[in-house]
Image (cartoon, rainbow, N blue to C red; front, side):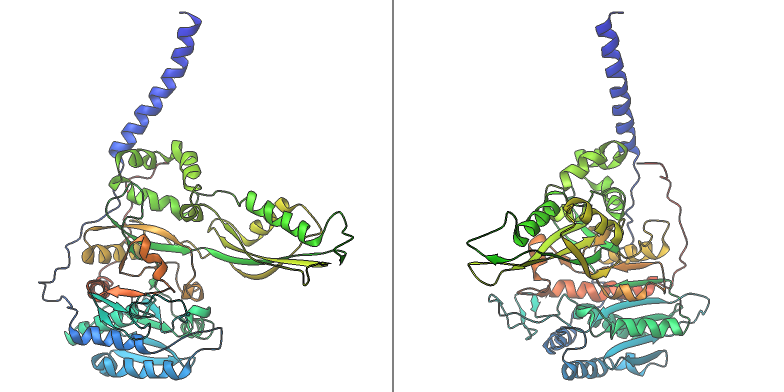
Length: 507
């Protein structure tokens, strides 16, 4: 055999092996999706979006329960909203199964007594407060009007997240009115300052439960939504069920050097040195960690529903991970899933046109990947800045949330997935990394099964409505919100059994 033929054989044989393995894995790759019986409007236990229920959500939006900063909000509006909740759900507030506590003056904790004390309780969380409304124009309805218009209900809090508060209570009211006695005890926890870190609301609720020795089976709080036209290669809607949150790190960079008059500058200035440090940070991003965290499971759970090319790649991550990392890093939205992000948000220096500033200061904000520590982020910064004249000070740090289990090996995750797909039968469900932060940070000691999800549909162009102009929810979606929580309350009474997945090999 000639040298050329031997060389060709050595090249083609491994390539053929790779192709065969890839094809076999793609064809045999298992589905993580379920197909439970759907919730239909003709069902006797369907909760319709009646005028009374919609008007209650509209009224909830009219309360200006704004949080401005920790310890500073709108106490009068919170008290009015709390009173409104009490009078709006008479069955909940008169049931012998329900106890209600006001925590930290303005937060609410409900306990629905289950009949089986051997079952660990679950907890549904949401929050009563909202962010301020800026002077930015463009609202199609007054932001605290709760106006119903063209099939939507407008106003601050309609998707963040008074729809969850009201939807949960509507579901519980409906459930109890039908004479239901739950098997599993269920808590409903509504903090009043989530938008400013929850120090006086959710934190105190969590401390209260911990002091009572409560251990939870699961916790579900607000989170991302059901998306459409969001995941490349997937035509169906995708419910993003977050199993962790990115951490948060803000650092202050400062440089002090000799100042002076602009007519006699030194070779370097504080502004120049700090500018180089910032440039080094932006040109040398934190490491790409795609494939090491839940973002990998996100892709795997959707693989069988993807177009052929995407399915081949995700079914064979053992081979394609480097390619996927490179592609995802090209766009800001997907790059944020791959790594700890670095954003220079402020740069301050100088007081006069002809005076050399003796000090320059920059603020850098990081959103920390779940597989990276705060110290690792700081070490990377020091390494790439590589200048001892640049001082780095931590302003605020929140470590990434623990990663909750997902898939068939997590009964709580599967119970939430089933509830989603009962109400949104045309959607897929996949574990996700929440880029923002929620009140769940205060409940880490109560359970390892913490999930974040808001049961309404949004397209990418709708994402700016969070904390933005024209926050709104469709009337159809609010109907599904109520029914999602109703089915969840029914499903939590089912046995939660670990189901081992048949596909355990390396991907």
